[in-house]
Amino acid sequence: MAEIYTIRIHNRQQGTDYTVQVPSDRYILQAAENQTADLPFACRNGACTTCAVRVLSGQLDQHEAMGLSPDLREQGYALLCVSYPRSDLEVETQDEDEVYELQFGRYFGKGKVRFGLPLEDD
Image (tube, rainbow, N blue to C red; front, side, top):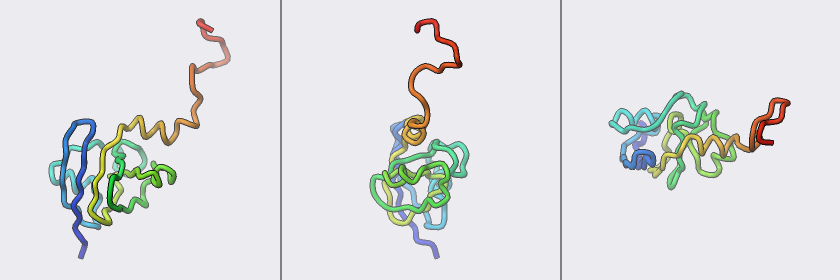
């Protein structure tokens, strides 16, 4: 039988807080939605960063989170759509662009994009 954990979610974008009960064999996002939590999501398969949260306390299993680097996982980020609770949790939603920049920003050049021709203001 699955253990049931209490998950506290602070939705920064909406300024709302949810407390939901999630079995250890259910995805946190799906269980929270079934309990009327309104949380950000897009792909539902761990490939994007729309449902990213920062874990403030507790443990979870997110072995299916393809869209989140091991480095960000170690920093306490998680994707709710593919996360299973392993203890009571407190999490906070993150800005998708902020997480994307943390993960991929170093791979993209900074500044104006050039396609072989100088820009007018150069």
